[in-house]
Image 1 (cartoon, helix red, strand yellow):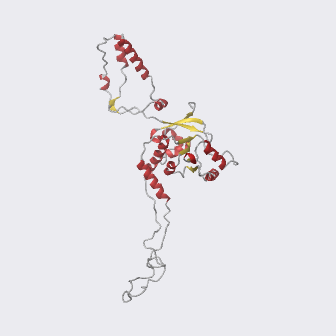
Image 2 (cartoon, rainbow, N blue to C red):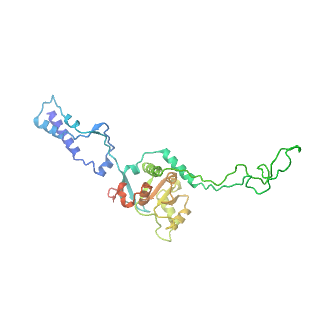
Image 3 (cartoon, rainbow, N blue to C red):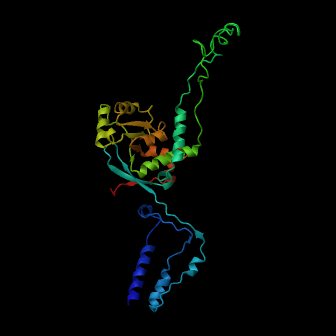
Length: 320
């Protein structure tokens, strides 16, 4: 009797597992990462269990044969990729409007400190002007005549008056204009952006906006921005914030000018001016949805119309 009850419970469990739709993205978000290394993909033996229950096998020999299914299928490793679920907020009240999920290769990239270091050094080298210039002894205007005789004066031997040890002479091995910029592969620099954004995402410091960062009217300026930062705990007491907008500074310069007046609370940058170092400096990153897409696909040649390749899909935030 106990054997029959246990078999019926096992049958109900197997049938419940079979009804799960693992292809559903929401199910993949809720389920943990499952791996099957060195295992064959095989279906659960529901038919064999049904036959054993119907036949009423003896309790002393409850055997289930699954050898026929493991010999025919090849050996593969199956991994359930869990997409990253992000809530899209409205500006400036931060009311949840939608949610979107991204593929893990874009917003759940493993931490690589070496790539981040290479990207920051590459950006720092590109910002160096390299305009320092001095005159060596051959660049100073003047005569090349020897000041006095080599011997017979009792003093040290000298050459001309343009010597670096004399006042008005040239500089010994002084700097000349040069290019300090270094090289970095495009795909490595693009991966650095995804690593930095994934790091922010895992720490809960990435806020994605569904609409654009704009001022409500022309009469509202720096004081209104200051109130927004204080109400959302984005100010200097909480580590400052970086605002990233898809609107260029040349198209909407007013919000950039007003933001400069409250620079102690944060900074705003457009999509062409933001760097990897900017994404790592402040306490949090507040970014528009389209700007986030452009950073995730930097140098990959993916248009926003093809955002399904990144896994971006918007739905109403009914779960909030």
